[in-house]
Amino acid sequence: MGKLDGKVAVVTGAARGIGRAYAIKLANLGASVAVVDINLKSYQDFAGESIGEKYETVVDELKDLGATAYGVEADISNQQEVQKAFKKIVENLGEIDVLVANAGGGSGALLENVASEVDPQQLQLVLERNLFGTIYSVGAVVEGMKKKGYGKIVTVTSVTGLQANLGGSYSHYAATKAAIVNYTKNLAQDLGPSNITVNAIAPGYIGTGRLKEQFEKADAGFYTDQTALKRLGTPEDCANAIEFLTTDLSDYVTGSVIDVTGGLLR
Ligand SMILES: NC(=O)c1ccc[n+]([C@@H]2O[C@H](COP(=O)([O-])OP(=O)(O)OC[C@H]3O[C@@H](n4cnc5c(N)ncnc54)[C@H](O)[C@@H]3O)[C@@H](O)[C@H]2O)c1
Image 1: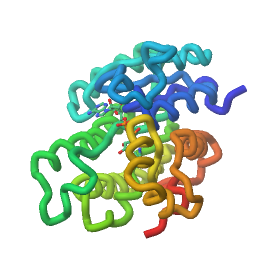
Image 2: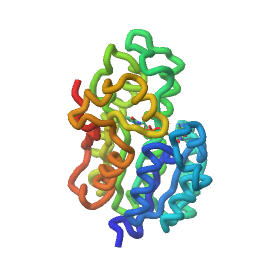
Image 3: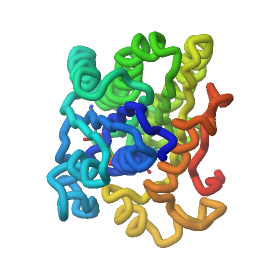
Image 4: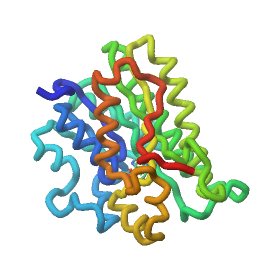
């Protein structure tokens, strides 16, 4: 018996990286899992992502785990595409119980976009993807959750949404992730009376197929030395927090931000 047997979960941006680990975790907990991604084969962009060795997409991987799984391509920064994608999910899997609004990310180099020199075009792109994308995804599930009188929503911020980056760099991304924190807290107040919990996860330096090599190359120890645990995080470390936030373990937790950073200090 899985803790999420009979539940329908959606993870956005799960074609690779941390989102993939969330989808696998939810499938292993017994949920039917839908993956929304702008490109279900996005793992092909990074040699460090291993899905392609065995599966065409993460959806096949989830099915191989015995889960009912469904994949749909949509750009989460486009409200119409989001609404269409979630409608298809409901038609195929049923009303949604769990949303992990994970799709997101920055643009440009990590040391660019210092706070006084933000590139407006990059800010626009990242704002639409991170904040609007989260809000559109939430908008597509709330009605169904309210009808059920049950729901678990997890948004994805970042440690950079909670504190400044060294030298104020990558501030366009950081500002959108900070906005997600505040939005999450307001959403929790709004949806609490409907028995829908809303929390955020704030990953630190997570060694995904996209980033592991970059982190390791950048400077031996530069990233890991900033953590209490002296190592990079893994997508599975983040997925363990998702287990807490999407199951009854967190029924009295809402409006919270769970920091999965290995004790990042700055
Ligand atoms: N990896 C880290 O160290 C780290 C740290 C803090 C926060 N985060 C956050 O965690 C989340 C996942 O990070 P990751 O490292 O796995 O990212 P990633 O770039 O490896 O994967 C992101 C996935 O989202 C999809 N995606 C991107 N834009 C999209 C859009 N507009 N519509 C639909 N899908 C889209 C991509 O195709 C990709 O499959 C992101 O929100 C990221 O900001 C990551």
